[in-house]
Length: 254
Length: 254
Image (cartoon, rainbow over all chains, first blue to last red; front, side, top):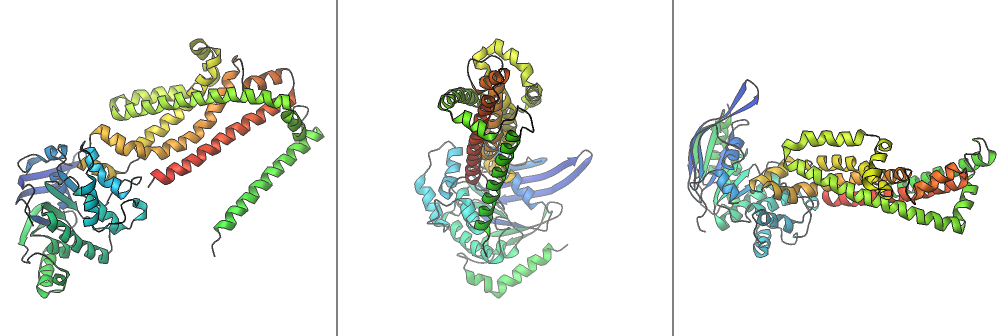
């Protein structure tokens, strides 16, 4: 397992929205955060705490009101322009008229690169979709679509992987299975990853470190995940895992 | 119990019965003379239509009308799509182009006829009028189609660093195809209408001309025979467009 990817540095970050004239909503009050290269950081918090906004700011989908976000020293827009970001959201958003294989070829086309078929097929295999290369999205289950979306996010070997509740729309059983899969997939490359999730169990199972956010957009707690890798399904049955999950869940309550 | 096969058989039976009832009513009205000499019996129209000399002459005229309609459909449709794409890529132009399109559509085709004769010559007027009729339908279909892609898909494209052109080619145009196919149905009918109407301004050949001459010479059965040919042609094209729409929607819509 090699450590790769870029580090993320967030200084003095603030973000406000003006949804209507005269109304200002503070989504992020203050964030100072450094994510070293190769770290898997999970972000949990109650609804409305700003965790998705934080991810959108790192992804360059929003601009900060003040403060800076730097990925490997560069602004997020720079990385987007150079196609160095991998993203996966709650909606897998595969193009309905393309097969799985063609969908995974899309990042290459958007970057103006020839499609690396070997890497595409390798990723399809890695996420457990071997045999479904030519399937269309409407033939796949929610879990399979999300696997494909994650494979797509890895196509260009990004510097940073940003995941916003990728398993939020799935049932608990599929979600748990995909958590185990994602841990395995991530270990293959170990790139810097930010995961926003509602599930504390998911956060602790996958991450090296978990931050707990509070409304309106600040870090309340930081937890260094004490469990060694590889994380196996047995971990989910351990007493100390559940104690830590419960403790963090308590912090989430107002 | 699966009732779908029975339902489509029932629908077919209803349609057949309805059509037969229509033909029977036509025959009765014509034979009894209830609507006067302007409405001949179906059998009389059929005799005129299937007379070999008349049939070959009507077929020649139909081919001319079809060619005009097709030309109008192609040029009007292409221009409309191009204009919609330009407007999509350059939002400042939108209000002006929208108003122009509405103006073109609102002008009665009869009023536009003389202008077209001057600009295009008499034998191109049918195609030109067909094109104008088609233009607005396709413009609306293309404009709304280009914005049809879901926000989730857009966000993925943005996250992967797609520029406006790539987004257009890979996402917005494919997503617009079902809308365009839907617009094609109406456009096909409009193109025939425009072509026939345009022939009334002095075209050398065509079904519109046959209808007009037959009407003026009080050859009622010939007039009706020509109308039947025009209707069959238009209906066939419409059904083909409807079939294409079903195929495109299955392939390209979510």
